[in-house]
Image (tube, rainbow, N blue to C red):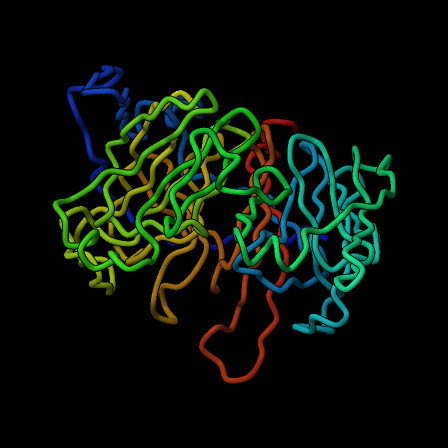
Length: 382
């Protein structure tokens, strides 16, 4: 069902401009490209006015999972998501795997699954697990052509000896000792897509944690599949979380969201400083970094930032009047919908965003998180 026109809240801002547009800066062992949005996204939409996407209600709800995403585009027209029919949630016990199809604006049951992972066109979800027997049955393969197979689980002794690192970018678990180079224990790391290596974010425990965190500001390190270490221009004091790292199929790059501005005392957390531009980073497997600044305005904070063909879509706001789904196109920040945007996923062509939006986040009780589709290219196809 298509919704009516969106009531936009326009917040004209002064986009951050720079004379370094298009200039590449090489610093040390990393390669940085800093582009204001107006030089990239605005060109893609030819400096048009406020974007007005077509919006579709799927008639289903979802439960946001911190460790693994629930929304997955398997191509430019179809979205796999974990959820339930509207009016039944939020209830994990009735959660199933559904498929939204843009061609007929409909949803159908895909599988009786309570979790799913999608990477590079391969869908994987568990069917059953026997921990005592050390066996798990999974379904894996291209959408609609998955095959059932049985896998051996690591024993408790193996897990106790060396805890596994789970990755949503490989749909698998990894031993630190098998990574290249082997990862040190007590580190927060993210195992990236096959061939991309892993990202070392910061110390995550151990007997020397306090001493390590008190050390001078340190940089995140990208270990490429070859074992080469690239020190990134991103630092511990920006308080990155491994759970915030996402992948943009549209940009073919990883998205990182700092939880604090650079220079924040390590260990100190709080709201983003008022008036200070929000930021997100794009990280490519070769170590290139692109920094995107989003005006603070009334957005106040930034959650799940994702690039699209018309700009960055993200969740923002801290108060009932401001909380919502936003779009920054390089010049204007537009409120697309009200409510807490708990999860966002963008199609490979960058034209569509699926969002799980809790429309009454400040009301008492368990309020539903509705799955909606925002089509930014609908008008161009007419």
